[in-house]
Image (tube, rainbow, N blue to C red; front, side, top):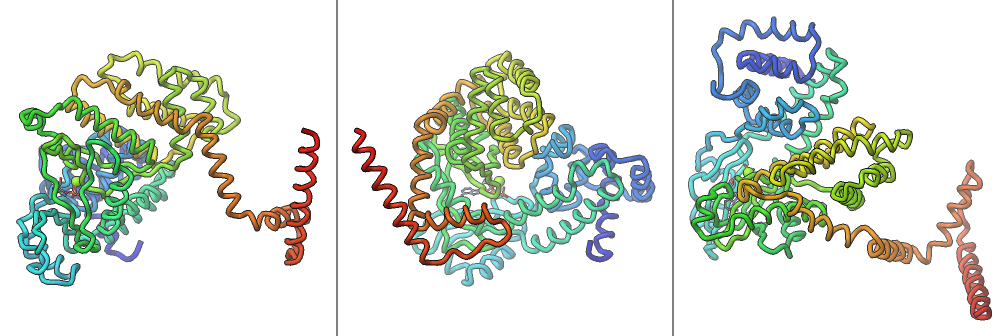
Length: 509
Ligand SMILES: Nc1ncnc2c1ncn2[C@@H]1O[C@H](COP(=O)(O)OP(=O)(O)O)[C@@H](O)[C@H]1O
Ligand SMILES: [Mg+2]
């Protein structure tokens, strides 16, 4: 949008896509019309001769993005979680996108730490290792805090990454508006919104204070979870570009051999991963949305430890209740009820045919429950469900898609630890205990109590509010200011009415 450098970036992107053969994939994904295809071909053609960038073993889309740099890698990773936008095939290709980049030198990391924490490194850390892991946004060093000698992980933001991202994001916006302009059919995919979603996610990840706050909140909501840990943030050694966390000792979650050799019950750990995730999503409405094996460690005592709090998901209480009922309906094969819940919540427009919807839901549920126990997948159920609800006019909701995509990953981790896992058997107690606590009479009583509490807080102002509302309702054009003297009068009248009513009641009894 701003200036010719964006156009240059666009040309560079187009050229790389063309040279890696990814252009066709992208054009297909966006259903590009013939003129756009031709333009892309003609413009990209001269670049064919420049030789191919990237790793020839990768699929074209991933190869192109890797060659284009960190913002593109990240963009691809985020798009891989949105098959609703790019289609299943491209999403699958993008999923394997590795965000391993060469580490930057220790000296650069030290400079960032000193600038951010405003002290020489020797005063902060008695040891600081070479980078132990490097990704597109940051790298991690193992360190020891001066004085206490505590072992910590220090995550350092890649120098210059914020500026690089900003430039690329500007180019993404330009691309999005070009797609809008040239390919009206793709507008349905809301390219500008997708870029805005990306910007939101990435900008959050670029500020470690936000990630640290997420770690703190997650530690609080999961404090009572047995067999689960979140490393503690060292806030005094944390700033926008540096994050210091308690060091996590343990086996990588994908090192099944080591976990077994240590005498740990891998099946139980696999089941626990799934149950923990469901509890976080349903009970807390706050879940780790990047739960792949690289972000999990298994402690020597069998505890599951989460790392990397850059992407978290949040689901409000109302939505959680609705979805618990929906899942419960599926478990009981009560498709009519599942349909009703959608209508009651206003997710599906009221003018749709409920019987037809219930039938479509049966088509979602039945094949899944008919599968072999160890092939059943909740993630797949949700994916099919969202397909159907979308067809019936429900709007796509980012937080639910994030939930579904994370569930795919979590089921994968659980299954790798316990290959014979029956996802439903493991999930059912969590869903049922949530239902028994949150849907039904007990929940109703709690809701009422909460409502009364809120009302009580407004107690002294209630008559005024009621009167103001009535006046507004009756005299729409000019709502007069309620004179101050009327409120006490109203109170007195309400009080008198209550006394009279009370008296009457006592008299009657
Ligand atoms: N607290 C920690 N203790 C031990 N290792 C850690 C810790 N935090 C991160 N790591 C290691 O560093 C790697 C990258 O850290 P992570 O927070 O996942 O960064 P990224 O956002 O780049 O994926 C992790 O996969 C893990 O191996
Ligand atoms: Mg990670």
